[in-house]
Length: 457
Image (cartoon, rainbow, N blue to C red):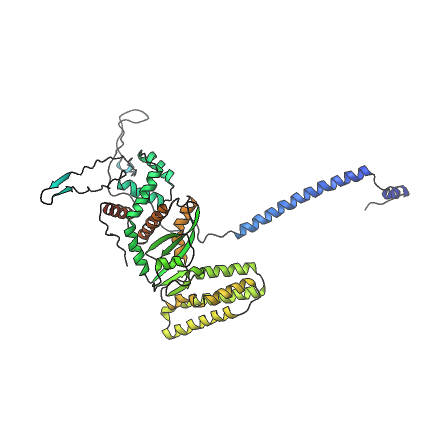
């Protein structure tokens, strides 16, 4: 502590500072404040980054194979087309012919490669004849692999279908790939029109999928935004574990499911809580994953005790329903039905309770409205309780939407419906899409309109 020894020092402490001294002091304080603010901002950014880092989800499993698990490598081809032997006549260092071969040191390396494709032009000549018996002109049949009036062969066309609807390439990149890899000159408009023609000719094959969908015991349904020439539309998917059907419509209303499934559909429709599905099918199962996601969102938005208790209560009811479904085979039918009605009664009581929170008022109102459509998976053995399959099957279209302008014409949208439906159905059926598209298009294009699509049960 500083000791003040005389009256002069006490006087100097009491003297008011000058204007210049005040200005200097003010500037010094401002500099200190700026330095402190920068330090505080840096600290806040660091804390925010640390908090965000904690929120990052941990991978559900580590990368790579488990420790101790045997590794895998590419399977060596059985058939070898060429064998090249590299030998030495003289030593590469001393240049003397003093070498003796060591069989144990022989190194074998097998390599696979793609041979550059050569474009092949084929001239088809169909001879004409006069039948003196029929008194009519006759023509020779189409040759194998011939597409009437087509300038591009079936291999190019089927490759275009896969590039567009499986790999999601735009027409310009398709044109560039044909030019760069095959030295084939083709325009983007020619590719677009070719795919539209394929879609029209394969419409009879898609009709087989539509008929199978309408006779299936249950279907998943979902929809996503779509554009045709910049105009807002909706892409609908109607799928199950072996079939996939897509429709592009301007409406998102109830008339679209009725058009696709018809009013006579007696199966079960699994969907989210969109009101467009309210009258589809004989029964309905609303997606519990959507419900749980909405519950978690309400819990985060409303941290009150009432909200936490409501979440815990409804979450327990849903978990008990899942547990009951998993134990179905172990329980007597009478016991199973009794527990099912208890779970259903608990759900009804939850929906009838009153809540102060607007979020839980909305959920209780939804549960009361769709009360009979929440636990349908307990009534029907093997029925999924969620709509995840529809969301997975609609994802290829979402990716297609992100990298393109969707469709620029009604004809393009119709081709998208047919070709995407066939492609995804073939994938679910584990069939070879290349072989099917080639055989079906050649057959229909040459005049035989009978469908060849065989669907597994």
